[in-house]
Length: 136
Image 1 (cartoon, rainbow, N blue to C red):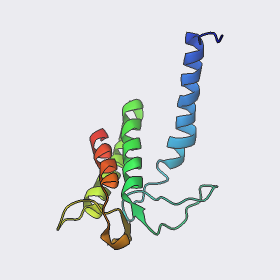
Image 2 (tube, one colour; image 1 turned 90 degrees about the vertical axis):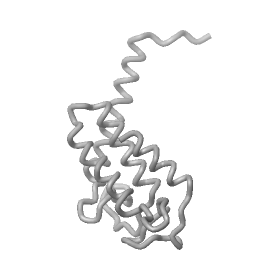
Image 3 (cartoon, rainbow, N blue to C red; image 1 turned 120 degrees about the vertical axis):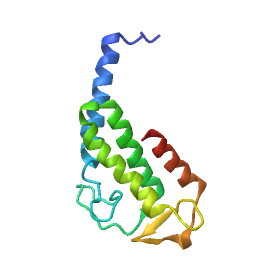
Image 4 (cartoon, rainbow, N blue to C red; image 1 turned 90 degrees about the horizontal axis):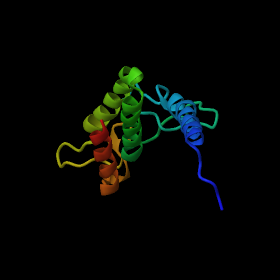
């Protein structure tokens, strides 16, 4: 029979998770992924985190990084300004680039400024964007 974890063990685990989140996720993606030139976020990196040229930018990835920045801004209020920049970057890309103005909906992906995959749209991708916008 296993014994229950103590409050100290839970606090230690929470600290380890928080350290991992900051070191291995947030510090690796932000601000590195912010694409100041073309908007949104870069999505291609080698194992050593050197950038690989982006050929496409997809709605799911752009939404995920926007959502993550929104969650980080809530969790780490002392860094809100930095994360708010990332949130705006993601929301503007979703609205200005991925949104199909004539007919509505979000394109699945762009090749530069041109809709990829024949202008395909998917509810799955739009759900991610709604989730990101709601978090923001």
